[in-house]
Image (tube, helix red, strand yellow):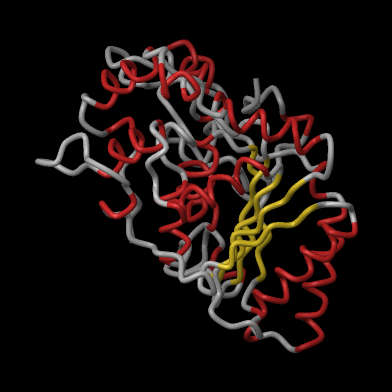
Length: 333
């Protein structure tokens, strides 16, 4: 399966149209000028009360190992004083397909329906469908979001992919000026927690499935970090269906122990926007000086920005050690 194209690669009307909307400073648009403004206000309200975590959960069976993993994190976070929200996508019959039904009222361009652009306008004018609005409200309230799922075709299940497509709309989750380390959700943390059918050795660089870091890149960089999230290292439960009960119990105990200190963990490393010439003339590519500075280093910057060099070890699996800060740039401002 492939994800929708990066918004930087859509038709050029995206940027001019978005800039017109961003600079429109009257009426209903005024409250939407700064993506994340409502989010920050909501965060301030809830910070005075309880901290909030959101679990976006996708598994069909309440008796699954995924359900057990979900229950562990719910219990542990609740014991730490968190208000825990759960979006159980299958139980909700959450609609995965992004269609015109998500837009209330008239389309901006009925002759050519472009979901991303129509959803952006609808968000700015409070015309998104109720199910999307409800999920966006949960995202606004949460300091931490955990995506819990079984790995399907090296990615999330279709119903969770639909949640990402429909909920993380333009304007609400990102804009031209607010993406990656400058993103709307840069003060929030998010992570993937999932089960696999394959063993860990199958996802090693010399394993038949290839390096797990490469498989994780589209989700962790292309979705979560693109929206600004500080992405915590993934929690992977390798092939639990083929493990004895005692091993599965150990997996859950290890997860519970990790959750106790989860919010104190350092996020994964990504290339900050400041390393790139963010213009059409510059092709949104690394500044020449940055490439020159990397020439003598043994690894690329990240899994995706490898520069033809060996991949940084476990870039999408582990946070960068403190003593390697000079070798790989931090993603935060």
